[in-house]
Image (cartoon, rainbow, N blue to C red; front, side):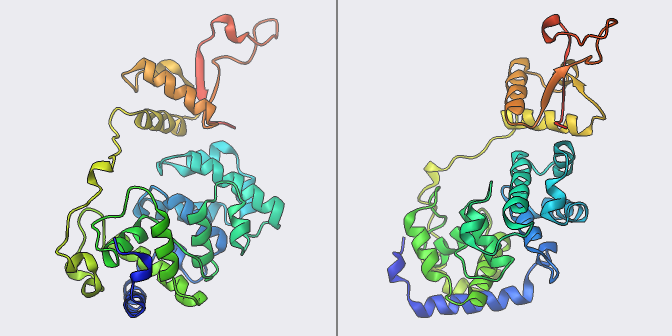
Length: 319
């Protein structure tokens, strides 16, 4: 891998300029890039886009912003409404953390997303990438935005590697900081254009090198496309039969239901009863699901039935 200090400034300048021109001509018309976007809308888009393809995010984001256009509106929503609106974006704990974030914005910043990276980092669920992305894409401020797409672009163009290391390294962070332009406008454009290149051209598995606007500057191409040095250290995420799939099945059933769902109904949706029980318990612990008795209206004497009295267990989204 090329050391950060050995990258020629002229090469970096040409890379920035070429990618910026390409982005301004060809950028995807994503709804959160519209001129009337808000900092809240950008923040929501960044949280939704983590681990979820943009094509799935866009329609949900549009509905979300129509329903909850401000942090204050979202902060007041019920948990059940939030989880139903999140739909099939996956990793629904992100939705709960986003609502915690909205409430913090209301309480600490009068309902306005702060234009300060340190204050953004202090919000629930906001990490280094999200804070940097909001600074760049919502406020047009200089920040060092490093996601998987940017890491891959820098690894190939400047480092000559097929892919970056499995986890972000200090050397990568240093190189990203050195490559980011000094001025606010140029840095924001670089962040957007380098991410866009990694998302649509310089992809992980099937990069479109023939149509890449910076192929003539790419160290990986110049080296003859050497293979991934870290392939043996990468783990592929399975889906079929995993706890993630079981949890997603439960959440899908509860989102679609008009009331509580009996455990017996959920048992019919998943073949492994022990795994299902474990996943239900984890969903309850995560605050994504509530467990209650089938009949909470009370007996003939008006007293509510005891939970240990053998009542069938049912599950629902939190109120």
